[in-house]
Length: 320
Image: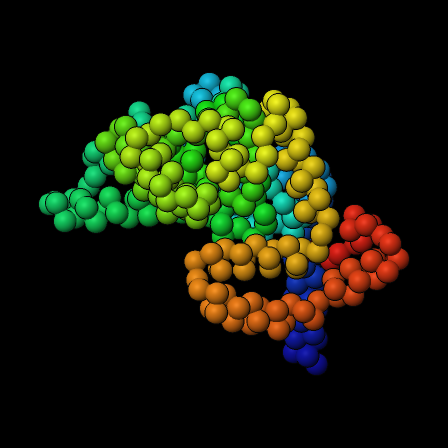
């Protein structure tokens, strides 16, 4: 009997101990949840070279934020652009993005003071190993702008003042380009002894569709002024000043953001795919894409809105 009593007592003490630990654990979890709930909702990450802001509903503004250095692209910038747009790609609250530059110009391009040492002091015991590491580093930097294409959210870039070197590489990876009437563009790399290697030579011919003009710009490094940029198709609109351009870019982003995210993001993905493939391949990819996407409720909501004479802004679509 005493043995049974002792066994029951042990079980009871163990049960109470587990309950105390569980309750204590619950209080700790509840405390952490309370702390996290006190944080601002939808808080955006902060960066050294970029400023991120929600300017409209479903619209993010990414500003190149080194005005004291003319937004020159330093080592941190190349890393942070990838981090930033990978997060934006997964942000269901964002349906469209606007990129602009702080200060007097969009960007002066690559920060030669910082990046020069990266390639001049490549690690390796011989030429082959140094070349291998340089190639790896170039591919990492290429991803800084390729990430803009990979991001399924439409990216609008708004350029004021100078857009030099790396800036041209950046804007050609964007979906829509606006600029101010004082803007100018320059494929500058040839003037510093190298061929542009992070996207301009690959994307610019597809953007403006004029191989002769692309060759001229790339071989000479001459400035392309805003009127010519508009006439050749590099930009789709030219604005009087920086303020009106940003307003126009935000308005456009808002118009895009109120549409079905299934439709808009699917459209961007298929546009990028079709650019790099034949028409038959693009059509096959499109058919495969829409065999599932056509089953979205967004089509029913959109059709009903048309019949009820509602605007897209009056339709509530589920997050994606």
